[in-house]
Image (cartoon, rainbow, N blue to C red; front, side, top):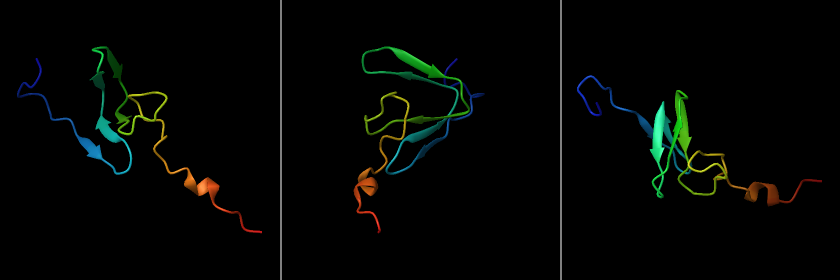
Length: 73
């Protein structure tokens, strides 16, 4: 029974820039109505939509500009 008094609240950690870290297990309903689930103790949900594994974060949000910097000689 969802939201019963015996349920403990889920903790969601917001990290900018980055994913939402959610204490698991979780079930996520996508925009098209399909659901995906994970039984891990903590999951990272993508907020930038760059992830190839959306809705799970694959760290695509990380700044890639550092690799474009000139190298020291």
